[in-house]
Length: 75
Image 1 (cartoon, rainbow, N blue to C red):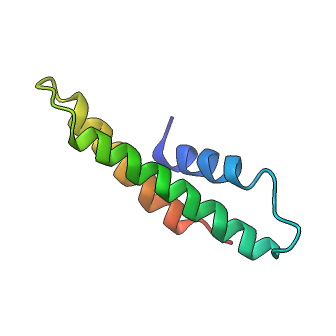
Image 2 (tube, rainbow, N blue to C red):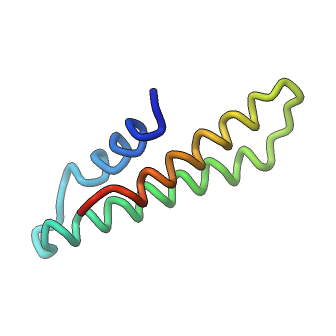
């Protein structure tokens, strides 16, 4: 899965049940913020995980790209 596809998947999951009191734009912004929190948590956990085979670095790189793609998503 590409970073762009993962970003869209995460935001869509949080945007699945919109709040009735928020506009479409506000719901999308909320979903993006939730997805960013998840990605930041993943990267924090990966920072605490040590592995010598390069797996950790590739996952950190991937989720850094996911974070960038989430931020680019249009409302």
